[in-house]
Amino acid sequence: MFDIINRTILSPSSLRVKRREDQISRLQKIHQQSVSANVAALSKTRQEMDEKDIHSFIDDFLKETTKSRKHKQPKDDSPANTTSTVANATTSTPSILGLTSQHVFLSIDKEVVQAPLLTFVNVLAKAFEEKMTSTALCFVADASSALGLDMIHQIVKDSDAGMALVQQPAWMANLALLHSKFDPSNLQQIIFAFSRLDAWRVRDQVGEARTAVFTLPGQGTTSILLPILQKVFPCERHVFVYDGGIDSVSRGVTLTCSERERTCHFIPFSPIDPMPCIDELAKLAITKAELVEAWMSSIDAFLKLKHAEKKTGYVPFVCRLGFLMSQVGQLGNGKVDQSELALKNLLQYMTGSKSSSRALKESVLENAKGAMLQVRSKEMQGAKRRKGNLSEYERGMVEECAFAHKGILIENKTLMDTVQPKAEWSLKAAKKMTSCACCMPGQGDEESDEEEDKSESETEGVGAGKGIAAITGVEIKDQNDAKAMFTATPSTNYVDGKSMFAFDPSKFTGM
Image (cartoon, rainbow, N blue to C red; front, side, top):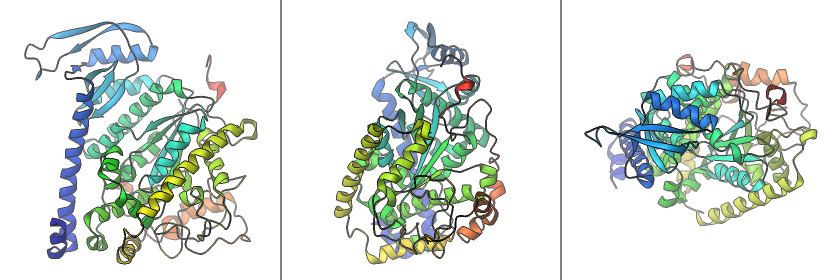
């Protein structure tokens, strides 16, 4: 009701300010509630680590030994500030419940432990920098109002391909909300330490593929998290899965409150880092405007990374849901069902199994196919229910918002380097794609099958030389400022996750 009034009496710029204030207040409240709920769910009291405890604890669980450890009760909970001892406790790998700008909350043997965030992170990061691991990481970013994440989740769980899933970790959502409170170096340190911690926690669940798959907590967090993840893990695998703006907004509108809360408390549907002012957003109701902006911010983050590809090293598997969802007949998606081939290509990348010497097992492909069909069936039912939830006017406004951005859509260009389903697929587009992939992927001109393949160097020239001006018609402003962290220098302590093998056996002994 209030938003309807505000849209009537306020200018687009004033409405944007008002909406943003309300959104920040709502997200902060949700963050506080989620952290408190996680802590309360395990324990009514919590214990606190000091720096000495942190060193001892991290050393213990990384060595998987059994030692005594001490925790101090928080001063506000215990005036006497007494010290309790947990003696002869098995030091298991902690789970991260959540974090604030000052503290991290951990679940250790069903006990909640509070630690100073930056102190804990610094010690943890140093420990992991000195410790080799054979587990590759794969990070999945979304621009589809969670359909892409649902697909990835189901495939990883059901395929039995040797992948472990770290599903939309709460700490990532918390960090996205709190990012402005940290300097870039601290953000990178937190991302590195906690990602390695989660991978260590699920190491017993990985199989032959030796891969831990992280799904980012929704498209609203992509613009914050993806650049940092690429900076910190330039040699690991990255997947960017996307769908059209209209379908994504329509899908987000139909989700119930309970489903939104299950999916990281509205965060995937609200842009953490808003787009520059777009007047057309003022013509949409706030829920739909937020969905449009969150989707756009995710696509925008992808384009910026690709524009600076030579600096960022960002060469992800660009996964178009139209292929997996078998949207045959839509221009750009082909005239025959290519979903099984698209699925195989995706699995080959995520598991590092493209080589014929490490080909995927037929059982893995069959299991993954069943998972894909399950998600597709659910989505088809959802599409029927939401039919008409966007009026023709609103659909037009979604398109207008994308055109107003200009970096997302101009003429009939698609997301660059979308992987085409092929037996010999490539992360770099071998030929120009001309179908519109943003407002409604695959509804532009079809690709010309007769067009000759370009060399890899020519393709890189389009992606990095002409960049966004050639692909999307926009010049990125303040890039040096916003993307100063992008100097992709792969860590020598970790092997290239994009290589033929998930890890290089020559770099490990006894594993």
